[in-house]
Length: 387
Image 1 (cartoon, rainbow, N blue to C red):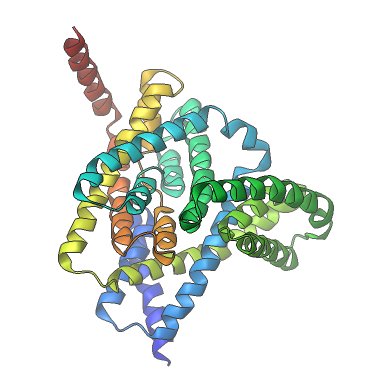
Image 2 (spheres, rainbow, N blue to C red; image 1 turned 90 degrees about the horizontal axis):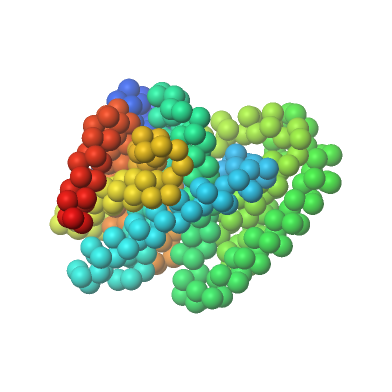
């Protein structure tokens, strides 16, 4: 058997076992696949053609992921998520980036890298947050707010990727290009989906292939305008959600996306193992990743307490569920690395933050009464300081 095939088989086998173990610890399975890639990357020589394949499949994985994200948000929910959930997300984004800048800038960290790490600290994990919701069944108010905030953050991430790619071209230019493509692309894609694709999509493999092809095509269109393919795929996903009989086909799509995302996570683990960084840099990246996770936790709790809905307990609960760090932090790290906006340390920061954020969120959700008591003490201290 070819060496590349052997290594790939070992990656999948070890990834499956570690993901199973990690899930039993109530953590995201993505952590298991990352660890599998890291272990195999450290123990075995990785063939060059396998790394080339990973690079191509990683791009396709990101496109398919954002295609699904756009579909899951659904066009009918856009009006709801751009209101109150948007305010929570923006406050969280602002607060996390300010804290990251305050901590890293005095150490001479380049501004682009500070922005990248700030983005990693700003978003919650949709997958792991869903898992926590399914296990603990909070109030309807909490569930709705958490899901809507997660949807808003996914939209902000896909827009942020364009700024990472076009940072050198100037902020104003990338803003204009992104807004133009969002507006024109969304209208054109919606009309095409409603009046043409709706007549062509069937509830079988042909319909699945057509949907995937359209998502990839919109990615190519976005890339033509020097934007990220993820943005085009995201627009395609939202547009196809308007097709009435697209849901059964999307159920067929999920296993396909799962395979590609698994490959992406395995490849990210391998990339971390192969990074040309010394142990001191690795340690620094892990420390920053842990700090990022705690900043994200603090930012989510702060934003939910400040402008969240419901009583205080529900706002604390909402912030606790959103304390996870998004797996899309790896996509942010990947884009920053390939477009020279950050060095290999961003992979270490993102991976460490994801793992730490999962642990923090699990602890907070399991100990909501303790978190509430902590806020009571904090409010008491603040009250005494004011008086």
